[in-house]
Image 1 (cartoon, rainbow, N blue to C red):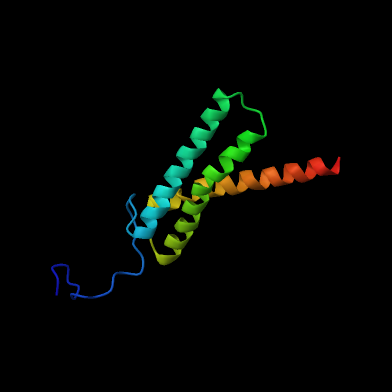
Image 2: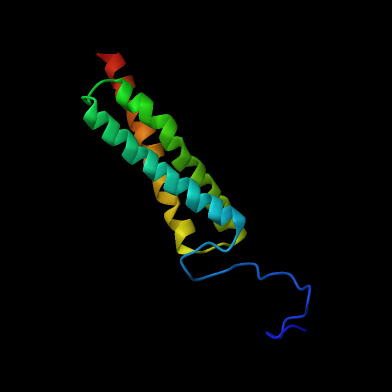
Length: 116
């Protein structure tokens, strides 16, 4: 028995709740990838603003960088399914969702341009 009344070698609880920091490696991967995704998006916006934004290359430059946010969102969903309920893991869903919406908006805009 350990000091907490749990036998030594007992499996961890199915879910871990509370706190801001992730409790699993997958949760940490989600948080770090999402953070890098946000940083890459900000970098893309700044580069686009400095180099005369408005050209079609701006979104083409940003989408691969924002793919980090999508990977973070995928890792966050898997971590949530596996029971890591930390706030950082839940927040890691936001950059992935934003990137998916931005990509879908580009696709819809492109399809609307083909009609007329």
